[in-house]
Image (spheres, helix red, strand yellow):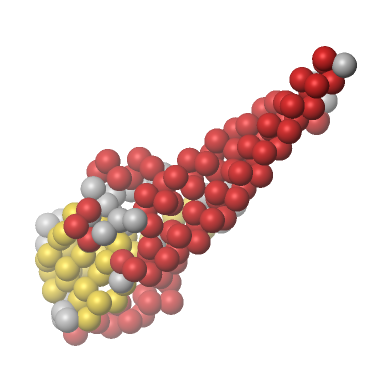
Length: 166
């Protein structure tokens, strides 16, 4: 199989499906409200920095261990807020957070312990609206790539069909 056939017959269809799945997941994520998430209140017993790795990069995240003995993750997209989160925890270790329910992780390739909103004392440090805005941008990016892939596949199929008739 030559490179063009491999690309059009295998790589492009898989890539299109993956990006369409990501677009749908991001769309669902961007419409989550606090009422759709699991609310946890507790005391931070410990915090630590962790690393998540993919094939091409490493991400730093902040783990918050609450008195329920579970860890909740502030993802690397909030890295600029890590110092203020740690500083607020030192002042007042009582938090209220919202995270995904177990079934919600299925459409975003993630874990349920990712924090969507974080309130320490009376200060909202991570607001769910900020996360929704980031997910909205991802909808456009992944959706456009999926649309380009789908359009390319349709045009290629149409050209093949018309070439075989004539």
